[in-house]
Image (cartoon, rainbow, N blue to C red; front, side):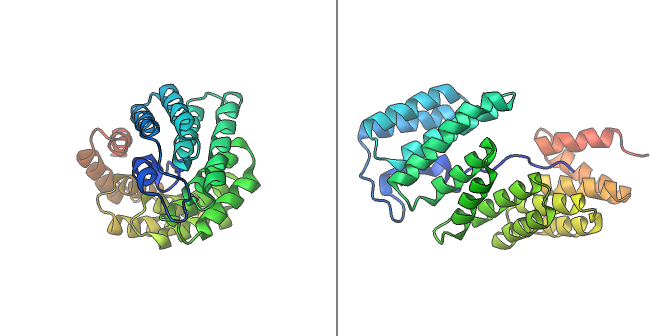
Length: 268
């Protein structure tokens, strides 16, 4: 099975950050942003959504110049730098944008120590930059924060961190925690299944994916993973049925394309 080998950014995310910058989150002591800073921030969001990372960074920096006390502007800047790192071909290239992502998240937390979303992002940036113990510590602090709006994402990121380190028992525990926190979170089921496969427990992985498919019958990544797991187990009829379903229902999506690719070489 293929796994999603990236970390999920902080729970609130930039889609909600503009609204939060207007209303404030629990414990936020920052003043309301200047109108021009808010417009710059909004422009940065639009550039980020469109994949124009460098322009997004410049707009977020402009927003910060207008309102240097707003933690949400630093949140946007940190996410933009993290996405710049995503585009790098090697670790040497990723070093500087990840350093900037860490600095932006730390500044957001300095301005608002209760900003759990920024703590989440800080943990991810530290993990990616190689400071794994401190990164996991920040994620654990975010997970334990009672204001964390999506602890399933934080648990999933901790699971991925341990999976990368081949500490499969800890990875499995955190992925199972992710599923327990939200029965509708796709990456939790995929993480549990991938870890069980890595531990040589294919039958248990299938059981978990079957539970995921029951809970999320139209989440094609889960159905695809179940089809691939059936294939690994030699249950070709069940595998074909799942893969054909995904290919038919999601023909242009990544899951549908992957299912169609697998079906081309399917045993007769």
